[in-house]
Length: 160
Image 1 (cartoon, one colour):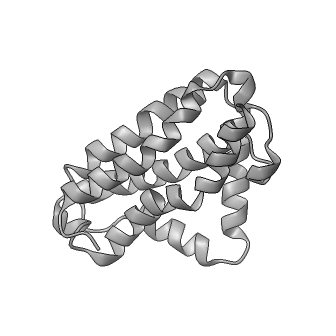
Image 2: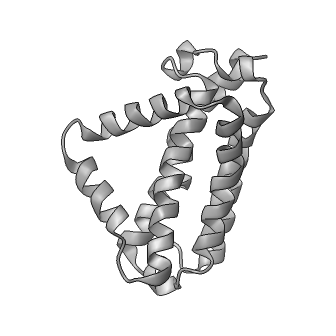
């Protein structure tokens, strides 16, 4: 558990840094499915990470102005429903597969920083000092990056 926002933001930034290597791959390399990544391509992994960063960003925007986040509450209720989480992930990957690669790259470069920026204006009482909110942001960022480190490593190894 974090006691201050700066520590959280620094750890999140450090954890995301490894994923930035994906942006250095060519469009063709990003579209190759990798067996060691569960069949995901670099584009798929980028999209999946962005999907949950966007959810956290929407939550941060809401918490910047109010005590609760309808986005967080809705997503947590959906996630608790059997099968819905898998469908949300599948729909998210389909969305990013349909996007031009330039748009995927633009979102990949922008969303994490935008999220960090919004978190700096959310009162700490609404996220750092609120255990459920802090856990949510950790789960959508740093913990999520750690969960997909294997896929990231497999994708980067496949293009060497």
